[in-house]
Amino acid sequence: MNGMFELRRFRRTGFRCAIGFLLWAVALMGSAARRPNVLMICIDDLNDWVGHLGGHPDAQTPQMDALAAQGRVFSNAHCSVPVCSASRISILSGLDATTHGSYELGPNYHSIERLRNVPTIHRYFKDHGYTTLSGGKVLHGSFQGFVADDIDQSIGGQSGGPRPERSFNWEPRVWDWGPYPETDSEMFDYQLARAAAAALQEDYGQPFFMSVGFSRPHVPLYVPPKWFDLFDRDALTLPRAPKEDLEDIPDNFKNMDQVAPTHDMILGAGLWRGLVHAYLASISFTDHCVGTVLEGLRQSPHMGQTLVVLWSDHGFHLGEKQHWAKRTLWEESTRVPFIIAGPGIEPGDHCREAVSLLDVYPTLLEMCGLPRNALLEGISVVPQIEDPATPRPSPVIISSYQGNHAVRNRDWRYIRYRDGAEELYHHQIDPDEFRNLASDPAFAAVKSRLGEWIPRKAAPEVIPLKIRLEERERRKARFRQNRPVK
Ligand SMILES: [Ca+2]
Ligand SMILES: [Ca+2]
Image (cartoon, rainbow, N blue to C red):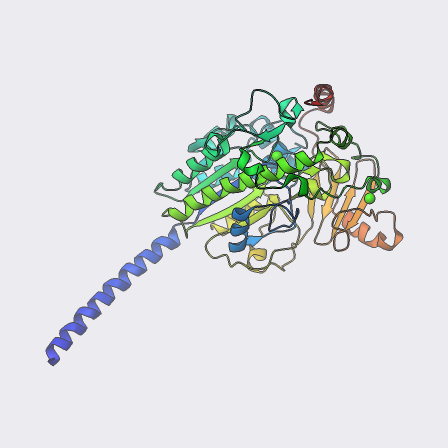
């Protein structure tokens, strides 16, 4: 080889290197300017019965567990109100119930006048250059009225269907369960998952914020038979619900007026095991839907540039404290799965600091480099994503009905009801919240320290008390018609 060739080759290579560097620099500038996409997966009434939270030994949730293994799990995360519409309003507005005043099922976002000038998280992303997409149950009731324009593109409506013509186990069907329909493709949630996976293949020309809300494991617990077949019904572990657990707690939420079956009703009809089975089956079906969306993301051009956040709107009792469903200030009502995964997030230990679903909004703004929204009342968990041992500067506050609050930090739960009644639980030694320590003088200092966080002011209920009580009586009257199917 002669020297001239070597020189030409050097020049060619050098030129290619220079061009390559230029292209790389342009690409880098482009990606720095382009903010990450957000995929927000919202689940309805899912408590801590997922593998990675260990809430039930028989739970089978491989898809959510795989996501958990790739990102940061907040294993001590709580809703701010333990009921559907109010919790979702809090997450999407970033405001606490004590500010927006919705503490009970009912008012939609767009019917709360004091939220008129509070941008939903979708609106905020849209106003900062994002395309917004949403499908399924994200808000309770769809985006209507003054929030209708927050969503650029729908990927599906809301439906928990389909439902069979007749109940299998319980009348009316709202609390029924059973293997129905025959196939996943007939399930609304599965169709939604497929639609979301397809929408993830598209190029929106700018970053997107997509929310996908599944309706199971909310009752009625109908899912195809294969999900029931995953479990041996007769070998399932039942929740720990000793009757004497109620002896050391005040009356407030004990045997509370419910719009769910009572534990005595369920035990009397011999239906406890069946409901636990149906709830686990519904969770596994929902997990499969989550997996379908995540597979869509993996196949898409957006993989590697998309943050995934998964949450459930609140927890769910299946007999714990002799209670069913939600609305209490106990752990089973308030603890939820909460995972954030995506580019730049190193998998590692769970964050055991108490965090709130109010933190979703400020966290996503910070991670996407969007300006701070001064209205928000949550706290960004970016420090806990970076180091899960970082303490949150304040404990989490949960409210249920005006004037009743729980304060949750890493190790404790303190509840104070409107009438001054109290409960105190030490989670390091009592994760089931069996032993109320509120009257033990040894913990007086802990109690008063936590008590300082109890909100001193709380917005009045959006729905006037008289109307709410009338509505509750109507619901209870309907509920008294409930009965097992013979
Ligand atoms: Ca819910
Ligand atoms: Ca107890």
